[in-house]
Image (cartoon, rainbow, N blue to C red; front, side, top):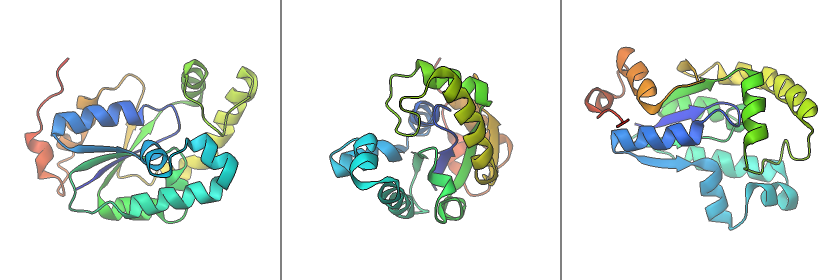
Length: 183
Protein backbone atom coordinates (compact mmCIF):
# COMPACT_ATOMS: atom_id res chain seq x y z
CA UNK A 1 0.00 0.00 0.00
CA UNK A 2 1.44 3.38 -1.01
CA UNK A 3 2.72 6.03 1.35
CA UNK A 4 2.30 9.55 -0.05
CA UNK A 5 4.46 12.33 1.39
CA UNK A 6 2.96 15.76 0.89
CA UNK A 7 3.98 19.26 1.91
CA UNK A 8 5.32 22.53 0.63
CA UNK A 9 8.37 22.71 -1.63
CA UNK A 10 11.50 22.42 0.45
CA UNK A 11 9.84 20.39 3.22
CA UNK A 12 12.10 17.39 2.62
CA UNK A 13 9.62 15.06 0.91
CA UNK A 14 12.14 13.66 -1.57
CA UNK A 15 15.01 13.21 0.87
CA UNK A 16 12.82 11.65 3.55
CA UNK A 17 10.90 9.61 0.99
CA UNK A 18 14.05 7.98 -0.31
CA UNK A 19 15.06 7.11 3.26
CA UNK A 20 11.65 5.69 4.18
CA UNK A 21 11.53 3.64 0.98
CA UNK A 22 15.01 2.25 1.65
CA UNK A 23 14.08 1.32 5.24
CA UNK A 24 10.92 -0.44 4.09
CA UNK A 25 12.53 -2.04 1.04
CA UNK A 26 9.91 -0.31 -1.11
CA UNK A 27 10.11 1.49 -4.44
CA UNK A 28 10.41 5.29 -4.40
CA UNK A 29 8.78 7.76 -6.80
CA UNK A 30 9.42 11.50 -6.81
CA UNK A 31 6.54 12.79 -8.95
CA UNK A 32 8.48 15.78 -10.27
CA UNK A 33 11.47 13.61 -11.27
CA UNK A 34 9.22 10.96 -12.82
CA UNK A 35 7.37 13.58 -14.90
CA UNK A 36 10.73 15.04 -15.99
CA UNK A 37 11.91 11.56 -17.01
CA UNK A 38 8.72 10.82 -18.94
CA UNK A 39 8.59 14.18 -20.70
CA UNK A 40 12.33 14.61 -21.32
CA UNK A 41 12.37 18.12 -19.86
CA UNK A 42 12.54 19.83 -16.48
CA UNK A 43 9.50 20.98 -14.53
CA UNK A 44 10.58 24.56 -15.26
CA UNK A 45 10.63 23.80 -18.99
CA UNK A 46 7.21 22.14 -18.81
CA UNK A 47 5.79 25.20 -17.03
CA UNK A 48 7.40 27.51 -19.62
CA UNK A 49 6.41 25.58 -22.75
CA UNK A 50 3.19 23.83 -21.84
CA UNK A 51 1.94 25.77 -18.82
CA UNK A 52 1.11 24.89 -15.24
CA UNK A 53 -2.25 23.33 -16.16
CA UNK A 54 -0.56 20.74 -18.40
CA UNK A 55 1.94 19.94 -15.65
CA UNK A 56 -0.87 19.53 -13.09
CA UNK A 57 -2.65 17.07 -15.41
CA UNK A 58 0.56 15.04 -15.72
CA UNK A 59 0.85 15.07 -11.94
CA UNK A 60 -2.77 13.93 -11.53
CA UNK A 61 -2.31 11.13 -14.04
CA UNK A 62 0.82 9.91 -12.27
CA UNK A 63 -0.91 9.90 -8.86
CA UNK A 64 -3.91 8.09 -10.35
CA UNK A 65 -1.59 5.40 -11.74
CA UNK A 66 -0.35 4.38 -8.28
CA UNK A 67 -2.09 1.17 -7.29
CA UNK A 68 -3.34 0.62 -3.74
CA UNK A 69 -1.52 -2.73 -3.88
CA UNK A 70 1.93 -1.21 -4.51
CA UNK A 71 4.62 -0.98 -1.88
CA UNK A 72 5.83 2.45 -2.88
CA UNK A 73 6.71 5.73 -1.21
CA UNK A 74 5.58 8.67 -3.35
CA UNK A 75 7.01 12.15 -2.84
CA UNK A 76 4.54 14.54 -4.45
CA UNK A 77 5.13 18.01 -5.78
CA UNK A 78 4.14 20.75 -3.34
CA UNK A 79 1.05 21.70 -5.33
CA UNK A 80 -0.18 18.18 -6.11
CA UNK A 81 -2.61 17.92 -3.15
CA UNK A 82 -4.24 21.22 -4.14
CA UNK A 83 -5.31 20.28 -7.65
CA UNK A 84 -8.10 18.13 -9.06
CA UNK A 85 -9.07 15.29 -6.72
CA UNK A 86 -5.49 14.37 -5.85
CA UNK A 87 -5.93 14.40 -2.05
CA UNK A 88 -8.97 12.17 -2.29
CA UNK A 89 -7.13 9.79 -4.61
CA UNK A 90 -4.08 9.61 -2.36
CA UNK A 91 -6.13 9.12 0.81
CA UNK A 92 -8.17 6.37 -0.90
CA UNK A 93 -5.14 4.57 -2.38
CA UNK A 94 -2.79 4.67 0.59
CA UNK A 95 -1.61 6.63 3.60
CA UNK A 96 -0.84 10.33 3.37
CA UNK A 97 1.69 12.14 5.57
CA UNK A 98 1.94 15.94 5.61
CA UNK A 99 5.44 17.16 6.45
CA UNK A 100 4.55 20.42 8.17
CA UNK A 101 7.27 23.08 8.30
CA UNK A 102 6.86 26.75 9.34
CA UNK A 103 6.93 29.29 6.50
CA UNK A 104 10.13 30.95 7.74
CA UNK A 105 12.03 27.66 7.79
CA UNK A 106 10.73 26.82 4.31
CA UNK A 107 11.84 30.19 2.92
CA UNK A 108 15.29 29.69 4.45
CA UNK A 109 15.59 26.21 2.92
CA UNK A 110 14.41 27.44 -0.48
CA UNK A 111 16.90 30.31 -0.47
CA UNK A 112 19.72 27.84 0.23
CA UNK A 113 18.51 25.31 -2.35
CA UNK A 114 20.15 24.94 -5.74
CA UNK A 115 17.00 23.44 -7.25
CA UNK A 116 15.19 25.61 -9.80
CA UNK A 117 11.54 25.98 -8.84
CA UNK A 118 9.28 27.76 -11.33
CA UNK A 119 6.90 29.28 -8.78
CA UNK A 120 9.64 31.13 -6.88
CA UNK A 121 12.23 31.82 -9.55
CA UNK A 122 13.55 35.38 -9.52
CA UNK A 123 12.10 36.39 -6.14
CA UNK A 124 14.20 38.40 -3.70
CA UNK A 125 14.58 37.01 -0.15
CA UNK A 126 11.87 39.39 1.10
CA UNK A 127 9.52 38.50 -1.76
CA UNK A 128 10.19 34.81 -1.22
CA UNK A 129 9.36 34.98 2.50
CA UNK A 130 6.09 36.81 1.81
CA UNK A 131 5.22 34.46 -1.04
CA UNK A 132 5.86 31.30 0.99
CA UNK A 133 3.82 32.57 3.93
CA UNK A 134 0.84 33.50 1.72
CA UNK A 135 1.09 30.44 -0.51
CA UNK A 136 1.45 28.03 2.41
CA UNK A 137 -1.67 29.52 4.04
CA UNK A 138 -3.62 28.85 0.83
CA UNK A 139 -2.37 25.26 0.61
CA UNK A 140 -2.78 24.39 4.29
CA UNK A 141 -6.47 23.34 3.98
CA UNK A 142 -5.45 20.72 1.41
CA UNK A 143 -2.36 19.55 3.27
CA UNK A 144 -4.25 19.21 6.54
CA UNK A 145 -6.51 16.56 4.97
CA UNK A 146 -3.61 14.10 5.19
CA UNK A 147 -4.10 11.08 7.43
CA UNK A 148 -1.00 12.09 9.43
CA UNK A 149 0.58 15.48 10.11
CA UNK A 150 4.21 15.39 11.21
CA UNK A 151 6.16 18.45 12.27
CA UNK A 152 8.94 18.22 9.72
CA UNK A 153 11.85 20.28 11.07
CA UNK A 154 14.69 17.96 12.02
CA UNK A 155 12.88 14.68 11.38
CA UNK A 156 14.46 11.63 9.84
CA UNK A 157 12.96 8.69 7.92
CA UNK A 158 12.65 6.53 11.00
CA UNK A 159 10.45 9.19 12.65
CA UNK A 160 7.90 8.76 9.88
CA UNK A 161 7.97 4.99 10.19
CA UNK A 162 7.70 5.19 13.99
CA UNK A 163 4.72 7.56 13.75
CA UNK A 164 2.89 5.17 11.44
CA UNK A 165 3.83 2.21 13.61
CA UNK A 166 2.67 4.00 16.79
CA UNK A 167 -0.64 4.91 15.17
CA UNK A 168 -1.15 1.23 14.38
CA UNK A 169 -1.98 2.00 10.78
CA UNK A 170 -4.31 -0.88 9.91
CA UNK A 171 -3.68 -0.76 6.17
CA UNK A 172 0.08 -1.21 6.50
CA UNK A 173 1.17 -4.25 8.48
CA UNK A 174 4.54 -4.10 6.66
CA UNK A 175 5.51 -1.07 8.76
CA UNK A 176 5.47 -3.29 11.83
CA UNK A 177 8.39 -5.23 10.35
CA UNK A 178 10.31 -2.31 8.86
CA UNK A 179 14.00 -2.19 9.61
CA UNK A 180 15.29 0.93 11.24
CA UNK A 181 17.24 3.33 9.07
CA UNK A 182 20.94 3.13 9.86
CA UNK A 183 22.41 6.29 11.38
